[in-house]
Image (cartoon, rainbow, N blue to C red; front, side):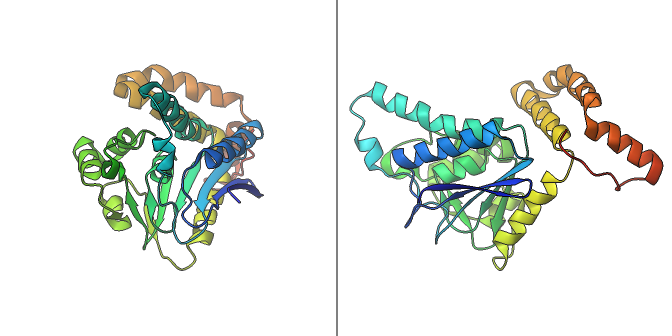
Length: 257
């Protein structure tokens, strides 16, 4: 057990299952990377990331840090770690992270690299690298700042506290808090809803927002018209327009082509 990939209709479901704590290890990183390669090679229309067990993750196996002999060794490790959420963020289809329980360090950093973060009521989140004198290395600090602001990111990382799902929903980090009962099914239904939509248009939206993150509204404006125009070569847009004109709004179906 480690990281599993299942296809449920149009959704790729990536499940971390490495009991008891779903810790980040070199072996887990390799399995996760292999699963991402399979997703990248045969793109679904949406991806759901989730975990099995009492926690989403208890964090990173600290012995991994202890094994680094030099500063250069440590940076090589951190570069490898950062690549994982970067690949998740680069997926051109909608991505959903479902946190059913405690979600620490690397798992939280993957979560905020996803487009949508869903949390069960009992879920808690934290970046707790301060306990060993480290700063988060997998993009969690900056992605948290993009969602909640620099001040909240400093608080989150400096304290290393465990924050409840309701608090992070108020901070605009968690998109929605769902009941504990039936959470897994609700998260899959959410991902499937996105998968049934105009996923090529969703991919264009993701690219527009990446330009916004790098340069604000002016940078996004430099690219949005070309990205939108590209959609006129897709079956989804042509069919969606025809459906709207013939049958009114909300009747179109999309294929991702």
